[in-house]
Image (cartoon, rainbow, N blue to C red; front, side):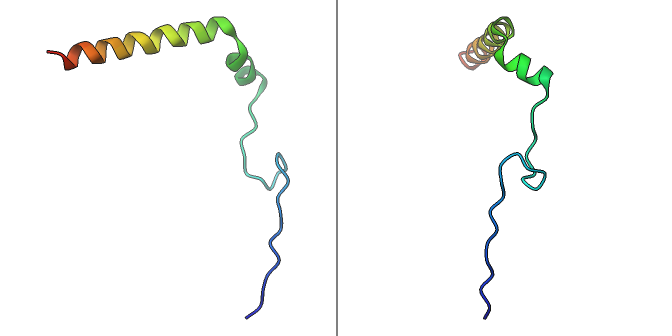
Length: 55
């Protein structure tokens, strides 16, 4: 049996196969107004789900 050396992959290199977020995605992740809107939408969805389960 031969032992193969495991190569370490540098993060954010082309070989890492990770998706690097673009400028729009970075903006949406840090925009407080967008996060507030998403928070409200998710809470409305959860409230509707909870109200359906009580009937």
